[in-house]
Length: 543
Ligand SMILES: NC(=O)c1ccc[n+]([C@@H]2O[C@H](COP(=O)([O-])OP(=O)(O)OC[C@H]3O[C@@H](n4cnc5c(N)ncnc54)[C@H](O)[C@@H]3O)[C@@H](O)[C@H]2O)c1
Ligand SMILES: N[C@@H](CCC=O)C(=O)O
Image 1: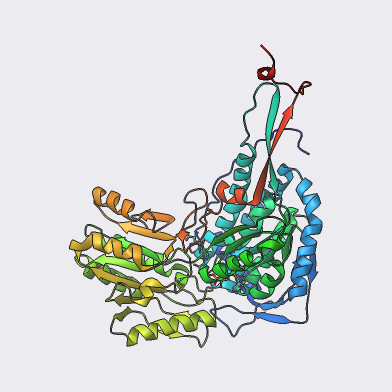
Image 2 (image 1 turned 90 degrees about the vertical axis):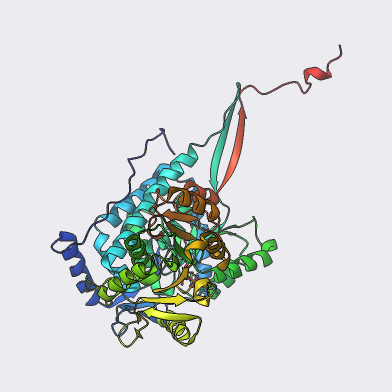
């Protein structure tokens, strides 16, 4: 129990290291990569703090080098999901009782372990397991995850300070109770930080969790658990299981104690989950909290005054960093014909210079896509564009999975604004451009608004302040994260709170109080110091 109203340590964004040639961090990271490549790891599930192994071993291989074996993980089944729920519910009473400052200390310590002694191991497992280059791993797996852990503590502190006023003679208080039951964290492959934040945020607020990571991000998920354990997270507060999504869903969504889902992933999976929860609503003790950040069809829109070099740089970084596998990645661009030849020539020049290959060679800007299923989907989209009279592949277009799942950064020019790759999320290094008549800015903004069901990120480029204001207003519902003269990726915790609307999610803004408020059920307490002793009020008295 707290005996003091404590101040938090100063909380700021984790500084990002450069990994420039000759830097100590580059040397240390390279030696971690070599060491991990020379080992075959065995990764168990973690349920109730115990390592759980099965006889079903699944390979872990780098997407950019799928002939190489990094290790195995132990695949569970429905019985392990049930074990995880039981372990979570067993840990719940003690965890709920733990003081806020101890919960805060665990997550602050985890952030310091991650950004300190574990930094290069975390980068290396993310690089090898998810095919991220050094810079992309650093901004995600270290900086953003440490930021989530630290800023969530700051936000919890602010929430706990949200207290009501009290009239004389009484004391009103708000107790920020965790939810009754357990939370299910269902996490995607593409961001180690998101994977750690989805169970981490509810746990910090006093909840217990079952966590099922993506099968292609088990390596980094396991390391997050190791760090949390070392930071002092009690056994059973977060339980890590590896099984198929439908297997986990079957057990979890029919459990009476299911209290909420913290999801990030594709829109269709989230829609199915929502429908299942609705179907099962009578089974639950309380109305479950449903938080999901989902897909995108993120855009860059340039007006006729935009600077071609700036637009081209935003396209190359926004569409192709991490192989376009950021939910925020630019995947459609609207460029007016007066600047298009110059924009295209800069993009072509940059793409000709970009190196594609494994993460071990730090000069590779683009690495592999996550797995064979994604590779096939992207290769098919390129083939379709090559066959279509409504589109033309104008850059890249090559793919090869003999050594790793490599898709060359590709630009498709669509001749119709509703060509399929202008509408549907592909989640890979493919950008589709539509060149419009500079006299038709307003009509093209309407087209942009109506072409896709998503509304996650978007960027406009212009040198004209009146246009900037007009476009910002016109596009207000098209993006939860909107950028003016910048690429649509790279949101930083506490600076550009992340999340989108429409089919892109519930927009609860990870890393903010809005998200944390979903994991508490406030209780209002009124305490009266001198209770009434007469039931009558004066108005009932006779004249
Ligand atoms: N909006 C955001 O903040 C944000 C951030 C990152 C990723 N994303 C989105 O995530 C997607 C890419 O990630 P992904 O490929 O890991 O997504 P995914 O939807 O395939 O998987 C997400 C999680 O759901 C599980 N899952 C898959 N099918 C399931 C099913 N039928 N039932 C239950 N669980 C199931 C997966 O095993 C994984 O753990 C993209 O659509 C991307 O836009 C969104
Ligand atoms: N926060 C990341 C997006 C995470 C989604 O995959 C960005 O803004 O680029």
